Amino acid sequence: MNLLTVGLSHNSSPVRMLERMAVGADDVGKLLHELLRSEHICEAMLVATCNRVEVYAVAETFHGGLDDVTSVLSRHAGVEFSELADHLYVHYAGAVVEHLFSVAAGLDSMVVGEAQILGQLRQAYSDADEAETVGKTLHELAQQALRVGKRVHSETDIDAAGASVVSEALSDAEDVLASLSGRSALLVGAGSMGALAASQLKRLGVAEVVIANRTSGNGDRLAESLRSEGLSAATVPLSELSGAIREADLVVTCTGAVDAVLDTATVSNALAARSSDAPLLCCDLGLPRDIEPEVAELTGVTVVDLESLQRRLADQHGGGARQEAGDIIAEEVRSYLAAQRSAEVTPTVTALRKRAAEVVDSELLRLDSRLPELDTDVRGELARTVRRVVDKLLHSPTVRVKQLASAPGGSGYADALRELFELDPQTAAAIGTPQAVEEGEHTAPGTRTSVSHAQPPRAAAVSRDRSEQDGEDR
Image (tube, rainbow, N blue to C red; front, top):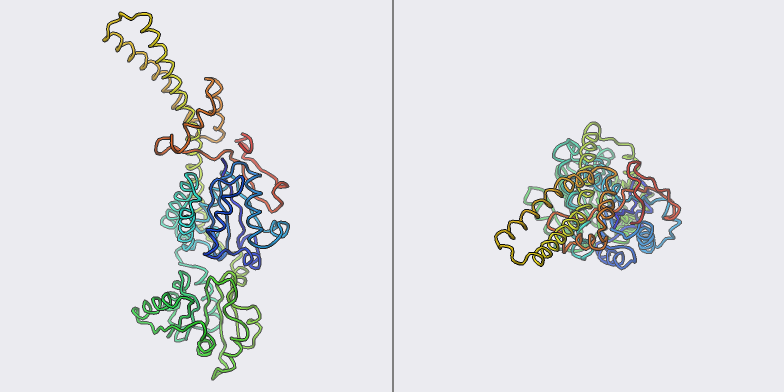
């Protein structure tokens, strides 16, 4: 079985394609089940945020799994693969581990070091677990990624500024309006990002926040929370957006709606009813976008959205903290892959010990038949002696083979053991199943071959780790 990641993000795709690929909360389970029904996919997890959509899968073969995942993504986006291919990246085996650890650390985010991705990864795993599409491999990988992300954030200053997509958008808003202190803000959407936006607005000194949300209960709870912190807050239904916009200096939208919730006519009517010609600043943080593109063309309106943020943040760097985070990730990747390679040989070592025990039992039975009059105590001591001899003979080589297998290029040691001792590969594989292995043992990904491309799957150039030329699609 092989680890596979197929996705697109702000690094590889324009916002317009991310919008087409966006996965609503109601569609996550549907896509996960569709992936698992595919011929070559055994486990699947979907990470969908405002700047990335990624599938993490365990596949029987590389090409088969890649075809299955890209087919599901193409159908979901409603585009031909040829149109999608230029924006996709693909990672395989060890490269999947490195990528997910980097994502968890915030190094692959639009705002480098943002901490929200940890919550989003946790939710992605929870969704897959609820849909029963994750097994042992993705469970262990996801939990390890969350641990690595926490370690990076605690041991480096990668998130010292506390930056996020929300804070960066509001920073642009401050540049346009000179200051948000004393301003009136309309917040459309009361989910996790809405709550973060509300917190940022309070910190920036807005005088009032009006919340509009599809579910009134969520909006009421957020408003009550803000009031308990001393900020004036109220709620309005989505049907009254025009009136709320009329009184606002700033509009922040962050809903999970499939269609725009703020159309040009609504904003235009609100502007016409304003008592002053004060500018209106709109921050659209939705994916797909919550505000119709034509709104930006209205006189007196400035729109900050994910596309403008993508352009501005494209060349940002995390400085020394980014290098420190990268070093931690490299260390964690090496450790994870070494453990995987070591675990890969464990079922074969177990099968070897089982074979040795069977040989000992057979010889002791033969001894009983030839010397039936042998004293019971003597027979018992002979049995213990033979078993000790076999255990001592096997101890050093089996410990050493696990050490050798954990090093890069060590995946061939399990094959060598099976060949030398004529072990049945199916027996070793059966010992390695989740039902048979002892706690802590697990099956490693197959080859450590990585792919990162934007070409049709079967035209991809596959680049190998030079030290691990151990074959494809095992």
